[in-house]
Length: 166
Image 1 (cartoon, helix red, strand yellow):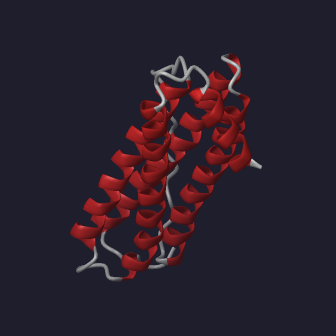
Image 2 (tube, helix red, strand yellow):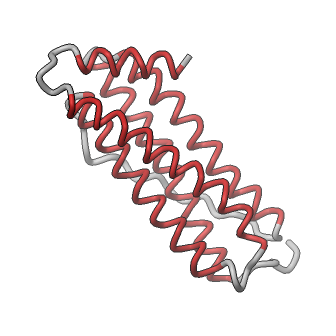
Image 3 (cartoon, helix red, strand yellow):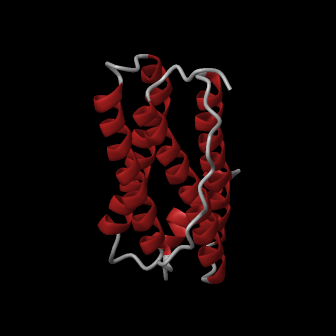
């Protein structure tokens, strides 16, 4: 391999981002299975699609590291400990995980861009994606909260998720 164009600390942070993205890949597969088990087939399809997108995100990091002269280390995936029992819990779990990753990316940006300016453009894609994800899951949770007296609210959200998965 060539001499890396970014600092060792920055490399570790991108490898941590790979771990986050692969963790989300696995988490969304897990949520899809859980949603299938409780009959939310739209949510199942949506989280299957999201899982694939998270895997693509992990490989964007792998490719970036390759471009800056680093062989990426792929971390082991940790099994999920939480099992969402319903659609609300699934959306809440997704929201919390996406918000955590947004905070991580913002921290990496703040800490690394001055010393490693080539990382700015790379991170901008992920920060935008995280803002969109946090906003989307927040909107779905707000919809369910506002319709808590409506027994069909989860079915409406499930149908919306199915539409988005198509």
